[in-house]
Length: 272
Length: 186
Image 1 (cartoon, rainbow over the protein chains, first blue to last red):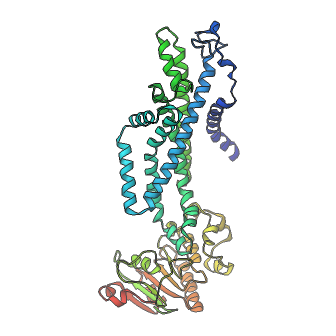
Image 2 (image 1 turned 30 degrees about the vertical axis):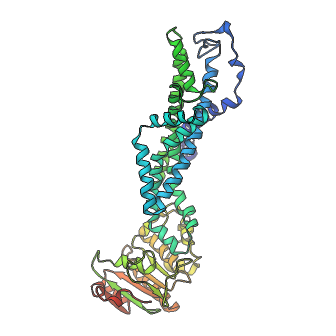
Image 3 (image 1 turned 120 degrees about the horizontal axis):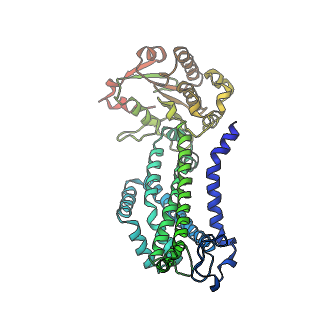
């Protein structure tokens, strides 16, 4: 009985992770043959042969979308992971580094939260000359503050927990306390926070690329696809924007779904 | 406080009994004065010779650990002690949330009774236990105290308990203002 119910509860999240993994690795293992230019096939509306239609150079839009998603996910993943690492480091410094460190880190967090994300990402990406590096650094540098806050609050609570004091009385050193008492409580928060960072990172990456400050046209991520489609909308090629847009939305929603599932699971575990 | 002496500390709520216990065990640093053991400051590393048992056992154990790990964190208590405390074998594989407050408190006591414990500070440790278990528990602690020459500080509201268990009773009100008593030397 128990096995059946656990399979049921795991099916959704497992399918979502599988989808995202396939999307992520499509860029590496996908078939590039469909991307060759063929002007006899240009501007075809969606059909069975080309479910997402073809673009003005006769390339299959489904393949382009999948490659674009793969690149966008890669950039988002990298940015989110760097962001989480920064959040962990600064949150820890704030929590255990004493009053001055806490004040300094909190000030930086407030500063970053006070400026609209998109503006800062634009500036940083532009200053670094755009491209992959600009986008990843821009998104990573702007997305850590809320997670750093969570880490700081969690650690502050843990630091004065009676079981930690008791463990210290029993002769455990600070490293052991951190690894065996604090990390297991911190990790769920960190994982959920990181997963929920992905959709933000991906959307911001697409947004600045769309605006022309991010990735360059020879790195066709979702933002590039959407930006290019704008030129052809007036000639009636609606599928160039609609399908890639929906795919991006679906990817983001999958991440949201995974993140909130993890969150629910961890809070349930804690409350039993 | 002498080795093997049993001191009862009584006083009204909120007067600082628990804080004093934390200071004496070395968990908190006193703003003024010093806690001494054998004329030396308390050790800052390794198993502390002064152990404190908390009033709320459910906060004193890591909710993500199994009872076995919690019990063996400082040393490995032998079966006799566990039997004497009424700790069942099947409890060992459970998580703290699967045990009651009284059951958890027995683990906390076992955990603090390591061979290197020379003074045991008991901060309202038996409030959540039923009278029979309370009696058994104090019997055991008295026995340990006598056998090893371990000092006991019993913090309680219950005057009758303090009179029954302790060799000397200190009222918290009497401590204030008298410097040499507050910095109770050990």
